[in-house]
Length: 126
Image 1 (cartoon, rainbow, N blue to C red):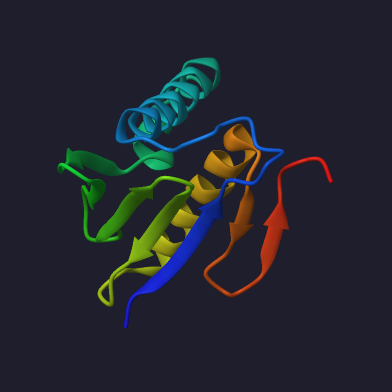
Image 2: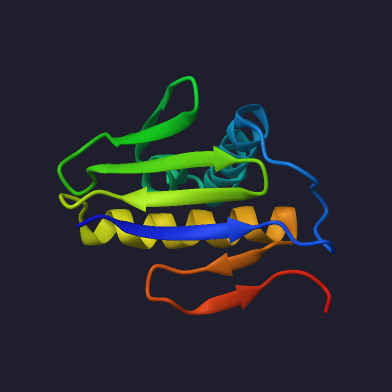
């Protein structure tokens, strides 16, 4: 059974719609932040913070793990929503990174985040 976390856009969100290109840019921004942090610390933090290769399909982004600790995270876009899907084979590392990415996306979008465990986090002004 796959686990799903969603980020919904609400009227108070900074984004009006979600596109594949916007999500790709957010992933690149996440990797860039990790790279800069690594430069400040003097080690390859980007490899630990983002241990995935990005594969782009026509309607989704698939993050494929680079080593055995990480399997895969799927990111699907809809008009007003982003879904992060963990397949049945996902590892604990995948779930942790997916939670981190969900929070990063929700904060940038000012959206409503439904986590994998069913809890809700609000990243917009209410």
